[in-house]
Image (cartoon, rainbow over all chains, first blue to last red; front, side, top):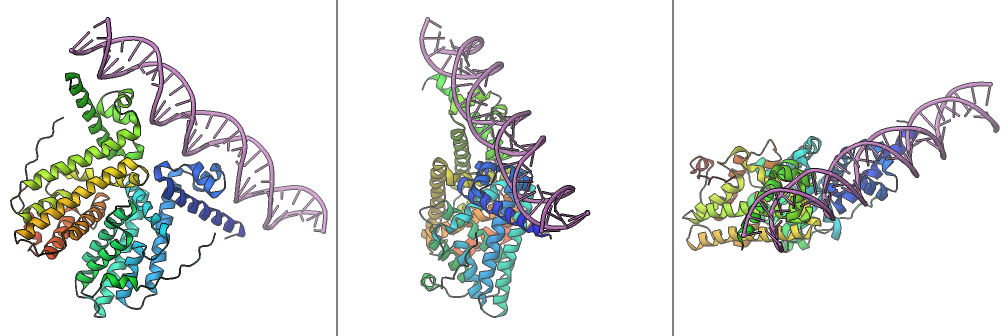
Length: 220
Length: 220
DNA sequence: CATCTTAGACTGAACGTTCAGTCAATAACA
DNA sequence: TGTTATTGACTGAACGTTCAGTCTAAGATG
């Protein structure tokens, strides 16, 4: 509300961003308050001042990162005209195909999120909500495509569930640098599944013709 | 070698088993030497005596658990006569369908494994080896089924990759108790995919007719 | 405009705790 | 007796959190 409050929010975001970076680099359970403070250029006391508890900071940082990923993807998807293109874009974002080399690093946060969720109700709730939204996004695209005659009529919810799971499972392999699965291979595998189940045509060559979208410059 | 050595190995396994239990319950990064020692009924010093470092203990515990799961599954799979039945059994084990309620708890270890792998070369190597073996197991079953005319000819390696990823992705949801995905739902989704892609028939009703295999009594 | 008040932003130092790993001593065994 | 197994007591470091207080700048007052 007050102009004072704005400064506070900026700091808050700054700390969250720092936390995300540190977690991605060192892992959730090796991330200390001091690490985050150093990355943010402040003191450990300030971090506690803003978040009260370490657990809260970490939980909010995970949520923050995922929210950003979702928002970015949703925006990119919304720009596409056809349901088919929207689906391709969604999968492309999930695989980070055509983006910066280290862009996939954000996926490593999911591993930490999944590992923490069983013992942290807050994290579990956030994950559940985000996953729900994600699957709904997929299912909606499928239904739109079916309504437009682009896709074959299949159970949209079940397909969304399978595709989301497939993406997660393959993403694990890519993040852990499994020699058999590159980002491009992951993309091809996902699109192959989509094309076969939804009844549209797709070949790996199509991947090369994708327009690499311009990325909005990140501030700060 | 020596009889003394045997006692030592028993202790070693005892500690590993205790570590697995504690990790599954408290999570990898909240597992302390003392927790493991208490669970094993010994002292923290002895745990260090056997494993030297905490990291080594944890890495070996994860490897130990996964190895057990793989061995158990491989054994169950080998008992089946047809490739189709072997595949069903493999998927059934993965979903813990028809087993004890809390049997799926072992899956939670995978979450910790995945979260640690990016920063622990030992864990990463174990995971890679196990995953490779797992996918090979699937691919072999597929090829056997194709040779026997049970399955349609598709790329066995690619199918194995997709099925393994699908299982992992769905398992995450089950472990995290996503309201939309029970073990049975997971099983049906996996088998539906298998049946469609490999060209055999499968309906959810078939699940009810599965013979629940007798589980070898665990010692200790 | 000058000065005082106040509240929020921020920090350095210290505290209390936790915990992995050490070590010397003891028990079990061959 | 010598070797291995086992432990209680201890340590040193790391770390989350607290706290007492400083600094800054926005209002209030005159």
